[in-house]
Length: 245
Image 1 (cartoon, helix red, strand yellow):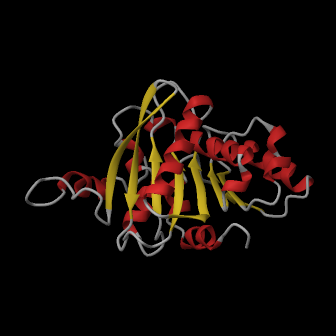
Image 2 (cartoon, one colour):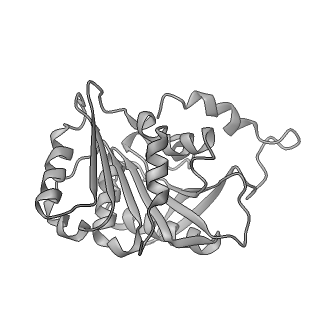
């Protein structure tokens, strides 16, 4: 959970004066969703940005959280750093967010990854997503998850943002070629060694992947998520990418 989380807790709890909850499916709110995949029911949220209206075509960001937000409550992914940044600076993130929750003791692989993709697909169809502007963003465990998803379906995404991730599978390098990817890591990360990102970046560049960017933050540790998502250059870069551009 990012350092600006407490600034949003009151908003999440307050809602409207009459009911104590935000109006369902109105701009600037989270919409609670469930999805059954492989016989298991998962929870996710969709965030509709201020100004959202049906009939328009919207960018869509699938955001995968880190290990600390695993659970079944559906609430923790709403306070991950990307969602916080979108709430604090809606002008920087005029996009629909898909916020799936990974169950306890699992990660973003196998059936859980299938669930995340299905949640994304349903959101694009239900809320008027622009299929040329579908993005992946992940932090920590989620960073590995988004890179793996991008390698599985590179044709589905316009760009990938991965922060403080661990990337043991080098076989995916060729599949990522040509897909815009911006990776971030703190060089003092005691949770996931910075060597993880350095090694993947080196492999990508050696394979001729010219669309990869890498930013290493000197003296910072694992929890650099707010720093990244609150950086206006990040949102500008991400939403400028487009399939077929």
